[in-house]
Amino acid sequence: MKLSYLVRGLPGHPLHPPLTDVTIGTYTFATVAGFLDVTGLVERNASYAWWIALVVGLCSTALTATTGFIDWIEIEWGSELWKTATAHLCAMLAATGAFLAAVLVGHDGYTQGTVGGGAYALTLVGFVLLTTGGWLGGAVVFVHGMRVLNLVSERFEHAAAPTPKEPTQTE
Image (cartoon, rainbow, N blue to C red; front, side):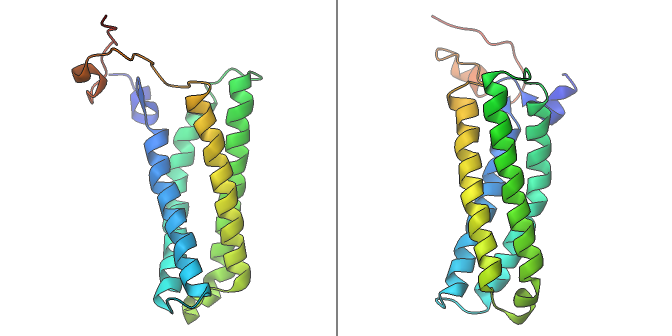
């Protein structure tokens, strides 16, 4: 067992992508909860859910970003993959900044049970940046093939195994 497996994941099973599910899901929930409050469809509780979800999203971002950064520093600098991954990183940093600003600007509204227009605008900006970053992250994996083994005939037992094994291409 390699020490790098703890921070990068196993061959063909990197840690960063599944962690993004938590972060993206939490920020998406926050955006929806904020919408429900701003439109008046749900009062008070939606604003609490919005702010708490943003805080949880920021916490999950710490782990998600750490694993992504560890993958990023392994990329050959200046390569096309590096350019795409760097654009992904920049978009995600900008999204995190917008969500952090929404938390800070929106805290007073949260304590009063409402989402302010400025705080929600920051949430929307964060969500657009998050979506852009997700698109670029998808390009890193599905276009450039980063951390993909591409063993389409790999036996199920090996492909789904939670322990590291050398891939065996079967005919």
